[in-house]
Length: 294
Ligand code: PLP
Image (tube, rainbow, N blue to C red; front, side, top):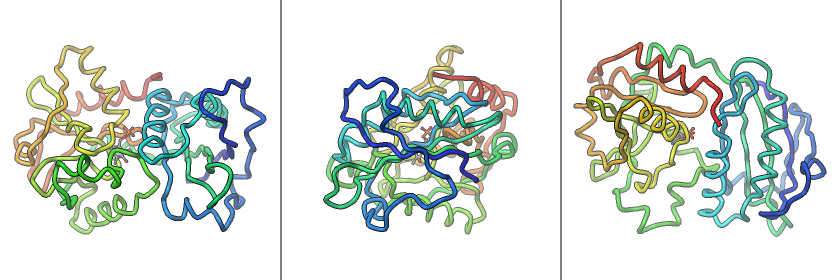
C-alpha cells in the first residue's frame, strides 16, 4: 500500500510538556529512504509498533493503542514513550488520511547502537480492502505455537504480550495457513490451549456469552477485542476472558478474528469443520467498528 505520510520523531522524555511537539517532528518523503544502514535495532526487530485503523480521517482507539505501545516498550525495556508527543504525531498522520479506510503505524525501535535515543517514526497509508473478509468470512487452521501455556511467566525474555517488530514467525504462520488452503491461523499452546491469530485476536460465541483467551497467556491484548467487549456488554451480552481449551473451538456457536484494520472477520471453518454464520450479527459488529471510536 502506498504511504501517504511519514514523520520521524525525536522522542521526548515521558511526561515532558512541550506545546504541540512540532519541533520534534521531521516530515519525510514517504517514497525516499529514511533509516541509516547502521540502524541495527530495526533490522533485528528490536522495537515495538502499533497499527491504528483510521476511518474517514478519524484514528480509532488512540488511547488504547498508546497504552499498549507504552506496555510493549516497558516489556522491551525501551524508554517510556511520551504519549502526548505520540498523540500529536498521530493527529498529524490522521490529517494526511483522506476519506475511506487508512492505517497509521507507530514504530519505536531501540535505535542506532550506542546512539543517543530510540528511533521513532509514524506512517499513514491507505488500508487494504477487507470488505470480502468481513462479509464472506475466513477459513482458519490451528497451528502449534511451540510452547505451553505457562511459558510467559517462566520466560519473560520471550517478550510474549509485547507487540514487537519481530513478526517473522507470525508471517510464516500465515504462509503455512495458506499452504494448508486456509486464510488465517489460530495458534495453540503445546498443552492444547487457544492463543490468538498471527495478526488478530479470537472471539468465540457460546449462546449469549462471548469469550476470548485471557491476555495472561502471553498474547497481545487486542484493542479491537477490548472495544467489542464493551460494545457487546452494552448490548446485554456477557463478555469473558478465559483459558480456552482447543476442544472448545469445535463447539463454539460462532467465532471471529478481530483486529484494528481488518476489523471483525467471521470464521467459516476451523480445520475444515464448518462454523455457523450470522451475517446480520457480524455486520452489526463491523458497523460498530466502523463508527468513530475514541
Ligand atoms: N494479536 C496479534 C498477534 C496481533 O498482531 C494483533 C494486531 O495486529 C492483534 C492480536 C489484534 O490487536 P488489535 O485489535 O489491537 O489490532
